Length: 131
Image 1 (tube, helix red, strand yellow):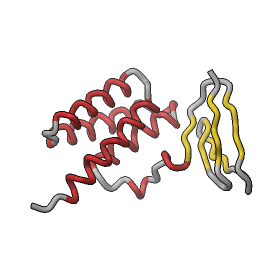
Image 2 (tube, one colour):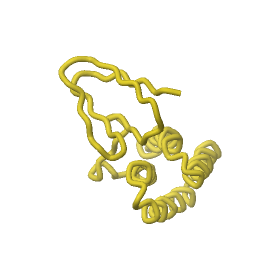
Image 3 (cartoon, helix red, strand yellow):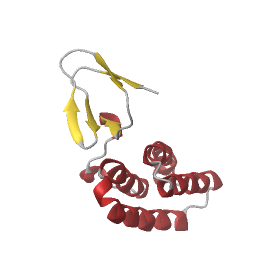
């Protein structure tokens, strides 16, 4: 099954570790085989890793983009997920954490990333909460 990407002018994306930028017009690409691909909006820079959920997302993203170094990223992921789950009490957030962990252990990194992004909303609400 092919993946069709519709790209905005200048939009960047990563394919198997190579950063590619679209030209000055809207365009579409059709990916015919399995590759590790992330759009610019899903790529996190190290300086943006500033919350617990983002500390979970980042090593998953690196597992997805850098398969040769997965072992060290998996270790970092497990440490960060353990820390996060030890303080979270919300059943829905815990269920998401379990889902993310299962996807990571089954090498479904892209799906784990998309589920992890849902934790950002939960975390934002909790960090902004003032009694």
